[in-house]
Image (cartoon, rainbow, N blue to C red):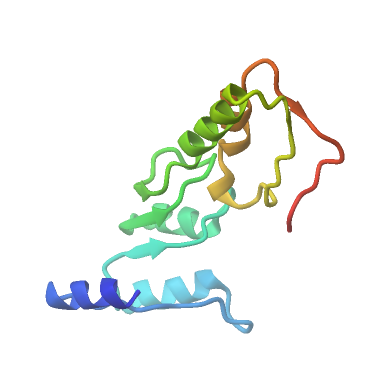
Length: 139
């Protein structure tokens, strides 16, 4: 974040970080920033599949970019690592090495960064894919 803040400062911008506060909803915080014209746009982190921040920003036509993507909002600007491509290549690599039984440990699917990763892994592993039991999910 330091380097991002320094680069933005060099370009004449300021980076303001916000966190969820127990006494205010994140939408209340966004509303204060937008109503008082304190910001020109947002960078939305930790995107969820059903994300009220995205709904709020789209409704008010406020510019934003998301770090990550989700299943619902196909029309938003985002930056992301290629989780699907990486998962596909991992499955394909293991299958080529002769592996046929995999334990795939993933987080809860509410997090948008998991979008497509499990299916991509299975696709890369091919028809011989079998998931060992039990299926464990990290929380």
